[in-house]
Image (tube, rainbow, N blue to C red; front, side, top):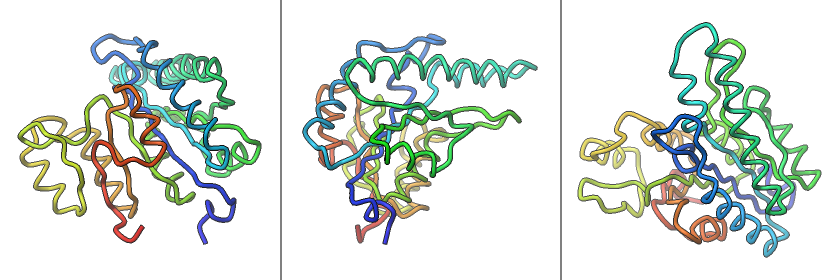
Length: 239
């Protein structure tokens, strides 16, 4: 029996992409108006679904990624500080929306810590981070780990409508790693970055995940409710 069933809850794991919540081309710039709307939609889902629990994560965007891209003696402390700043602003907005969120730095992430927060009726907010040795802790990796252990619905909110094909249209479903290869050969964006890694890890871990546009009004709420908007990556056809 999976951990989620043992705890008698239905879980959602929602990762807010760094490209969604920050300004792409401006270092340390957060999209506050969007974040407020996202927070309100999460709160609406929580209010309407008391028997469902959420684990939140967020990436680094123009905060952590920017600082981590500059390699000098202060890279580790700068990146850590940038992620703390971003997490503080996200936490503040979620708290304003009435969500009992508690931050978990990626460098200190353990699944037991997440469980402990959930058992206390808190909403874990885990964030991508940098370790003391300078290695990056990926929010994508942690989201997959949590979703797998909780047997949870995995949701990736990004700044695009989903996974796009060569014609610019959203691919509604990917059902095999072979399809991913064909798609990536033809795709015109992000062929070597986060999307490629994300999809491969979903299949490698036999998970189902939805990759969708978190900036469109109502989409966060709909994804949490269970609608397959954007692209469904079907890594577990039996689920």
